[in-house]
Length: 329
Image 1 (tube, rainbow, N blue to C red):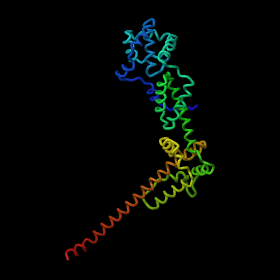
Image 2 (tube, rainbow, N blue to C red; image 1 turned 180 degrees about the vertical axis):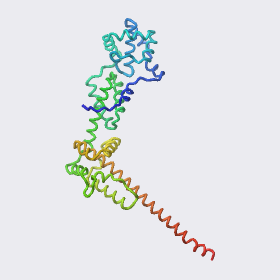
Image 3 (cartoon, rainbow, N blue to C red; image 1 turned 60 degrees about the horizontal axis):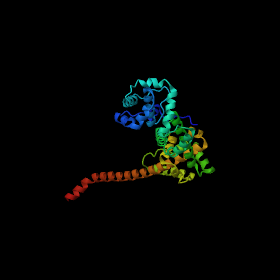
Image 4 (cartoon, rainbow, N blue to C red; image 1 turned 60 degrees about the vertical axis):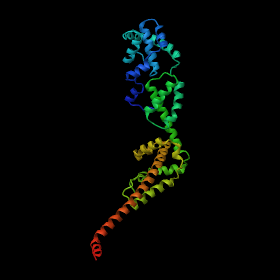
């Protein structure tokens, strides 16, 4: 099970936060006539208020009010006003947790909802995989899970469970991405990829660092050096379709992370991750080199025109006196 956290403390609070807008609160927590009649069927003001508040929590955000958890003050005031019951009645209701559980068991079938279980966990982990293949943003994944749970009328589990589910889906998606990137690589390909992490002959830098060298000034030598790097990547023989199997956002993300990772750290990756990371990096580097070669060419041709123009202007200025004399003659 993944142990990494994918949500910050602020994102965890934001995920199941209540709306602050008064109009939105009224829209979400205005009880219907059947809801009011259902609540008033229970004996005692504290029970009526308690089950109505629990009903509101299940309606939105879709979770259960925790044991000994005080309800959100605006919701308590809004619900108590509709029932014409003092908010202080909640204290009496909260004193007996058995009643809260009994009311929850009564509310779930009435609202067409069910408790979150292991089968839902596994089902959602599989459902979330396509989204996890596109992004690693924890909040995006968690929001997708919350929305799907609401559609399925399943009670939201604690944030920690949602976070663990998203982390597991993200880990599975990452493994699948590396598998897609390395699909079709034979032993020779993998050996060539590993050699990129070794020192280049006659250089204190690795071959990978050489491939990612900056373009430098717009000279013919710089263009030829970049073409040499591009040829070195093509000699590895990577499939042209390798980058098309993975969502472009994830491909760029892996490549950028690899670009900021030291060579010795890349060597410590497990083979599937190391080779997949290098494939993504080479695909991105190949595209970058191509763009830089074209840019260098444009800048070099532009410099030729600029030099020619300046030379013409200097020559014209030097010969200006002789030209004027000829014109006067």
